[in-house]
Image 1: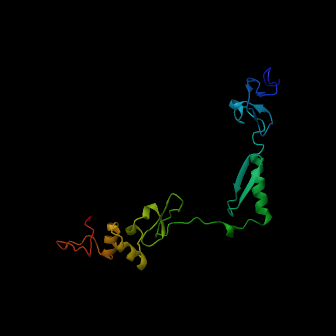
Image 2: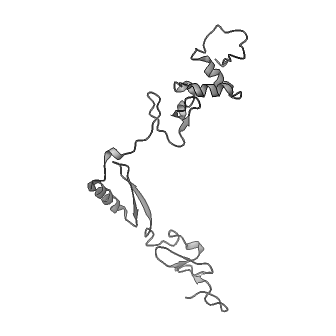
Image 3: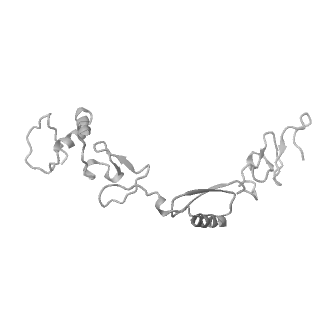
Length: 188
């Protein structure tokens, strides 16, 4: 069954799915079974391609050394054999395993990921989101960062925090009017 019309017999092709046979002027050729399909049946799933994993790429990651290996067109049963061959080859070294960065706060086991990492603006260390505030991670400001923060008028909270110098906010004896040169936090 060829495609086209009476005027243009070489234009287009019929879908090779047994239930369809639609004439398509922009046909798709399946990369696995090399048959021609219409737009509705172009994916391997829609035409139930028997060779759908023909060129599929799967990346296997070794649990011992974190090395990644790309496989193409292998069956799932072969994945175990590939990992076994890698372990026996001598390339698999547990010392090469990449350790995931963790939060430096004491007793915190949080893993620092792209979405769970915050860099402190005062001490410039990376911590998890739970410890992102300076009071939560025992922040030790560097002299250059504290000078920069004191010069910024928009950052009143951090300026007040630096000015406290570790004083307890539960102090009951407060001055009646704090001076603008020495700001304090009134949230306590």
